[in-house]
Amino acid sequence: MTEPAAARVLTQPALADLAETAAVSRWVRSRQPSGGDVRLHVLDHGPVDGVPLLIIPGITSPAISMDFVARELTDLVRPLVLDVRGRGFSDNGDAYDLDTYAADVAAVIEQLGLERPLVLGHSMGARITAVAVTRLDLRGTVLVDPPMSGPGRGPYPTTLDAFLGQLDQARRGTDADEVAQSWPRWPRREQELRAHWMGSISRDAIVATHAGFESEDFFATWPSVPAPTVLVHGGDSPVVTAAGAEEAAKANPGATIVEVPRAGHMVFWDEPAAALATTREALRALI
Image (cartoon, rainbow, N blue to C red; front, side):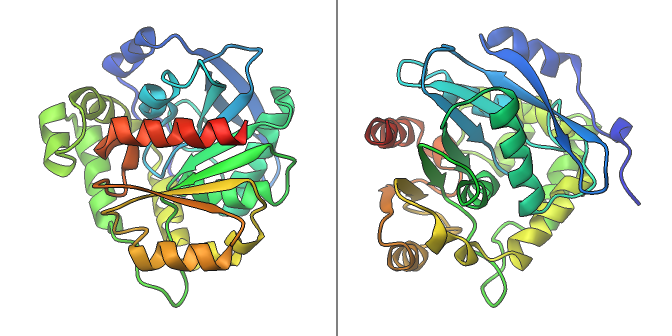
């Protein structure tokens, strides 16, 4: 049974978080595979005359969770962060596979008039980016720690039960201290945002996307991702291991592979300064 939209929770503290960002909300519509539209929410950090950079977050990261990344890039690009369907302010969907997610990216680019944008995706967002770039005219891509699990490969390191437990905590009412038990390395503000916004995510979106991590093979698409592209991975990531990074380099020789030392899978949250410096360097090269 499809989860009702009413099950998703946006509290007053979550809405108040929006007052602390200078981003402007923009809306687009994407067609559902079964018909009808999904309304997608985007946080546009400007400036409007900058080279557009569409940022696609991970499985349990609404757009505002990437605010600390986007606001540090506005001198280089125009960052726009997508609330992927089933997260934040975007509608629930009737499908959460890579083809459907990539179609949403195409709708955002077309309806917001983003001419040959850059696209940066983290985790799930990196997988979406890999599929989207094979279908769209993009300036370049940055894939941050894409899940390399899939058919015939090891399972995704974070279990579905762990994600759903965090979702239940958020819907019950949680705080930064409880979030810190799962994510102790994160900056305090990012722990607070996680506490405020995790409840906005559809359970169906988490379940279907997590299943896709093991049924959809990243390496089926990765060799076709055109240059210029940069794959950034955490030096201590269980998602992109040293062996995985080596395989990625061999499978797509035109890609640039960059490691962020000491970072786990949550690269920007684990090592914010180093991850941002790496991202800025990659974007300069792509621009």
